[in-house]
Amino acid sequence: MQKVLVVDDSLSVRKVVEKALERRGLQVLSAASGAEAIEALERDRPDVVICDVILPDKDGYQICQYVRSHPAMSATPVLLISGIDNGTVQARAAEVRSDEVMFKPFGVDDLVRKVDGLLGGRANGSTLPASGPAPATAPSAPPSASVAAPVPSPIGSPAAPAPSLGLKERLEGLAATPGVRFVVLTDREGFLIETAGDLTPDADEVTAALASCLAEASNGIGRELGQGQLLGTILEYEAGTLLLQAVGPWALLAVMVGDTGAIGKVRYYVRKALPELVRAL
Image (cartoon, rainbow, N blue to C red):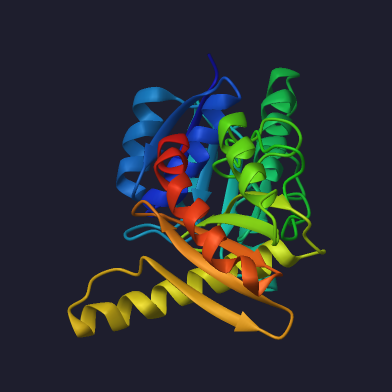
């Protein structure tokens, strides 16, 4: 079984990626720091490395350099992930010779496609491109019929390895509730997990980012007031109402309701679906 090492200090990101890739039939190893990543590299010799650029000790560029300079792993594909999209990140990625760079937020479907490509290239005996990483990937469009993503695929997959079908079906059920326009499931950092319903272009990414910002700000206020984490909130706009609901400790569900008269019923169905969504994640 091919192995993928996921290096990120965010537990939610690691969980999402792990589920998505495991659904793809891959063995997933994880590390929360550069030191843990190096231990895993030496111990497990993964077939692909997915590494966040910002880590608590070393950074993703150093991990990539470690792989490139290793006598037994120099050809191992490295996919760097960054929350900042600028020329500096791309230049550094090219300097350390990463194979790919992806920028948050992105869908699991895109991630799974990238990993499939890197694994396929290695299986075919391809070598590292001398020119550096491939062009950076722009934020993905809403995951298509399924993310089989590693879920959403728990980090997004297109109509290909995507989120768990159970998760997709549950979200589609909520999206089919009268008055609901679309639903978006994201982690607390704004990383898309899965979507369903009638979304306009980029609506999923905007909604995910909004949900993340609201949760972060509201959690801070909750701590100051001694009330704990955000569980849910409602935003009213001219053309609709956005319901935001926490799903377990690390995910958020955003539901756009076009019919204000249906809000009560929608909130009931959302809360009723929470236990199943938590289990599906």
